[in-house]
Amino acid sequence: MSFLLIALVVLAIVALWVRWQEPRSIFFPVRQVGPYPLPDGFAPEDVYLETPDGVRLHGWFHNGSQAPGDTLGSQAAPGAGLTVLYLHGNAGNLSNRIEKILLLESLGLDVLIVDYRGYGLSDGTPSEQGFYRDARTAHRYLTAVRRVDPRAIVLLGESLGSAVAIDLAREVQAGGLVIEAAFTSIPDVAQALYPFLPVRWFLSQRFDSIAKIGDVRAPILLFHSVDDEYFPLHHPQRLMAAAKTGTRLVELRGTHDQASIESRAIYCAGLASFLETIQAR
Image 1 (spheres, helix red, strand yellow):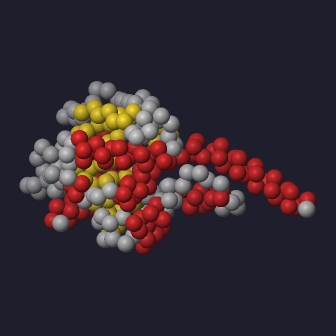
Image 2 (cartoon, helix red, strand yellow):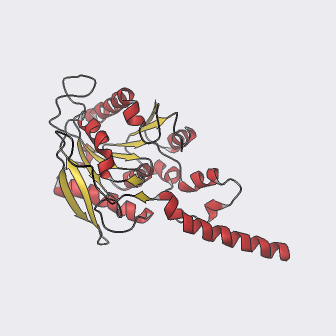
Image 3 (cartoon, rainbow, N blue to C red):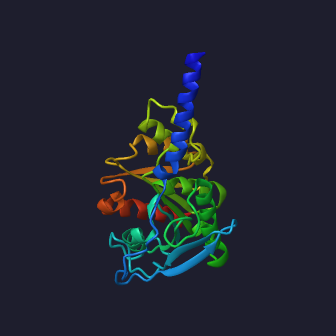
């Protein structure tokens, strides 16, 4: 009985510690949007949206359809006529993604990027279910306000945003799904960090992509760096195995946050090929 009591006390302490640490370990929002002035030629339109639960979100819509061509030098931009819904990762805000937005523009893509609740100029507090509502609100804006054909929307999620993009892709029609630096689930990541503690039992934020990706019907492109310091290559490999639609994995080199920039040529070639496949459907 004494051993059982001690075990229960230890579990209770672990549970309280996990719940206290959880939001601090997952969400790293930055409120300040900058730097200013914006780079030459970068003039996004400020967009303000309201979610079904009354949270006001801020985003940028950037028109890349006038780009002269892709980074590989072809005459026609492979993304012309397509719009990316860009769901960024767990740190910073949309102003930290300007270089990535310009990369997408170079392929002729229009880009909508919206800060999740609690990030940048968006109201609210970060949460898993809140992020899912924010993504659906952004998608609804594209289809209902911008009148973008759902088949011309490419959902792009990076890091934590990959889980948000996968969840959204189960619910809406899309031309394609691109996920970068993805992971299988928060419990898997947490358990690898604390292998001797039963942390997966107590997590409330799950972002369970491995359980959801099989419901996605759009074609899927995965980018992942072999040098990723947070998520080993087995994460995208397991996601590919769980998917029930056409998938392709493009391996990059570079850090978790910057691999698409550090491996720009490989990234652009892989994305251009994927976009051409979408255009041909």
